[in-house]
Amino acid sequence: MIRDSDTGEMRSVLYKGFASELFVPYMDPSDAWYFKTYMDAGEYGFGLQSMPLDPLNDCPRNAHYMDAVFNAADGTPYVRSNMICVFESYTGDVAWRHSECPITGMDIREVRPKVTLVARMVASVANYDYIVDWEFQSDGLIRVKVGLSGILMVKGTPYVNMNQVNQEEYLYGTLLSENVIGVIHDHYVTFYLDMDIMDGSNNSFVKVNLKRERTSPGYSPRRSYIKAVRNVAKTEKDAQIKLNLHDPSEFHVINPNNRTRVGNPVGYKIVPAGTAASLLDHDDPPQMRGAFTNNQIWVTPYNQSEQFAGGVYAYQSHGDDTLAVWSERDREIENKDIVVWYTLGFHHVPCQEDFPIMPTVTSSFDLKPVNFFESNPILGFPPNQEKDLPVCKAAAA
Image (cartoon, one colour):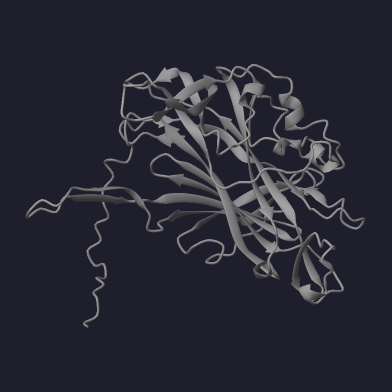
C-alpha cells in the first residue's frame, strides 16, 4: 500500500512479491561439472536457507529486527530471531531540487533529501550468500535489489601460472590462485509480483514502444523525432519480453478502470537495471528446467497454483511444469488479475578479486509510479533543518 501524501488515502500497488526461483548454471561441460546447475529456491529452499542478521554489520545501527516463522519437516512451526531488518536509509541522494538563475541579491534554491525505508533478508545457499533488499522510497518508487557474495565454487588444476596453460586448452573459468580455477557461471533470480494497482485487482500490461519517426519535408528543421506507441497486451504471449537496447520500451501495469484528473490510467512501470540473459540453447536440459529465464518479463493471469517459476517440484524436474510452460497457454490478461514475473541476471566470469570471498555485486529493478499520483507526491515534503552541520572551508594557501 502507498499513502497519497495529498489526500492521506492508502492506495494498493502490490498484493504480494517474492523471489520465486533462482537458477544457477555452471559452464563447465566436463564429467565432474556438467550437472552443476542449481535451483536455489526449489531444490534448497530460499527461505529455509535464510540466516539471522548480524547487527551493525548486516544492518545499520538504527535497524529494527523481526522474527520469522518456519515449519519443520513434519509441519511443526518454529521461530527464528533477527531474520529481517527494517531501517531508514539516507545516503545523501537528492529527492528533488531546483535553483533559479542568479538574481541580484536573491538565492532561490529548493532541495529535498531522499529517504528510503529498507527491508532486508539474507540467505546463504551452500557457498553463495544472497542479500535481498526491498526499498520503499518516499516518492512511491519500490526498488528490489539483490546482492551476491560468499565463496566461489572452484575446481582444482595442476597449473600455478597462466604461462603453463596450452593456448588450445580452455579452462572454463579463471585461474584465481595456484591450482585453483573459478568456473564461469550465471545467476538468475525470478520475482513473482502480484500487482493490484489502485482499487481492484483487474489490471492490464502495456508495452510502450519508443519509435523513431522522420519529419515531413518542410514541416520542421528537424529530420527525426521519437514517439511513444502504446500496445495493450491481450494475451500472455503479447507480454513475453526480451529486453533489447535497440528496441527501447517501457513496461506499464495500469488500472484501466481508474484514471487521473486529466484522464490517464493510473499505473506503475517496471524499470530494469543492469541484467543478463541466458545464452544456453533452449534444448539444453538445464535450460529446459530454467526456461523461465528465456524472457526477462512474463505476465500471467493469477492462478494460486502458479507461484514458483521452476515448478512446485523442482528437484530432478524436466522442465514440464515451469512458468514457460504455463505461459504457452496464451490466456487472456487484459483487465484481469495479473501477475508480473521479472528475472534479473548476472553473468559471472570470476576474477582474482573474487577469491576467496567475493565482494558484494548487485543488480536491481524498480517499480515506479506512472500517472499514479496527480503530481509529484513529495513536493510538499519539508527540507532538512539541522542547524549544527559542520562547515568545510578550503585551507589557506
